[in-house]
Amino acid sequence: MRRTFRFFCSAQGDYRDADGNTTSELKEYRYSLRPLRELYAELSVEEFGPLKLKAVRQKTIDTGWSRKLVNGRIGRIRRVFKWGVENELVPVAVHQALTAVAGLQRNRTGYADKLELSSDPTKPVIVKILGDGASMDDL
Image (tube, rainbow, N blue to C red; front, side, top):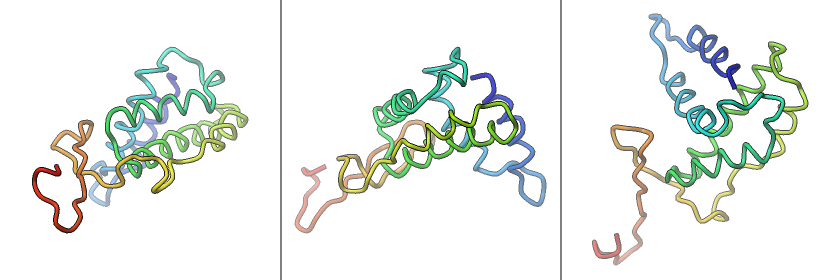
């Protein structure tokens, strides 16, 4: 997955504000690509497919990220592969196959829909939404 490094180098130039500072989106890509690198750093992009993307997604779920955050970060991974196709670094069939992986659906997955991030965004704290009459014991 060395080609993700090329994307990241390219993105450093693309994700800048008017003053030339990098935007938070660049950091989001870094967080999004971390589980991909941890699982498949030595894999060629031609070998990466939907089941491996689902394994990356499961790793993010196991970390405790919310459904919305998981979907957003998996979407960023897909966009990295799309960038690779655009720059003839990734076969188009790989990106097409990754688009077949559906996102986590609201109220169907059992995962938290809301989350509160600590100062380290890689270590989220799930926020439980309390109903009427709930007490601190429900936390």
